[in-house]
Image 1 (cartoon, rainbow, N blue to C red):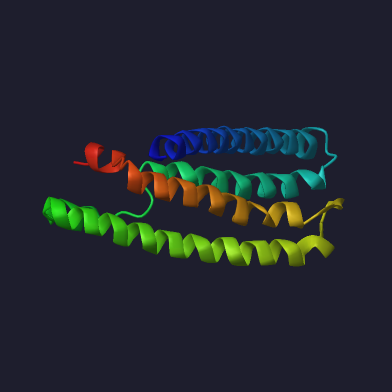
Image 2 (spheres, rainbow, N blue to C red):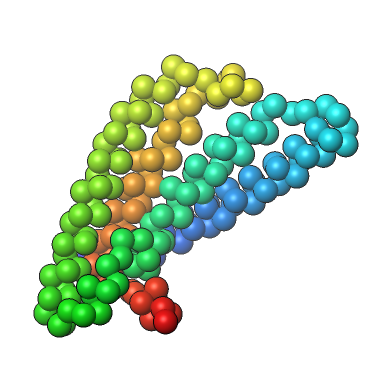
Length: 164
């Protein structure tokens, strides 16, 4: 069961990370395109700014699951280092449940916000609903929950190992 869940987590976090990288690439490419059209061709493309913002939001929410999985998101390094091993495991559970609670709120309200945004359209892209931009919160939140639980089952403290 644990191995299957960790396999699922590797798969979901990997896809999320690749998608986050694709969103960063898209944002950078659109930024260059915007510079060329605005300052060289003197014909600004208004829709690029909206898509840059949209892709950066998705990049952040798709990158968070990997940060949670690596133990780099919610961190109490000093307390963890000073605690005996038995207390460290209790600390792991406390941090896990606190993070799950926060992310659950983001998923709940993010889904509500996305549904309310169905009637809105993106300025510059009137044919696209704001639902797709707001959907980043619940999608990133659900993927983050998987990463949080996976980090509890198989802790990875990459920031602790590299910290001085």
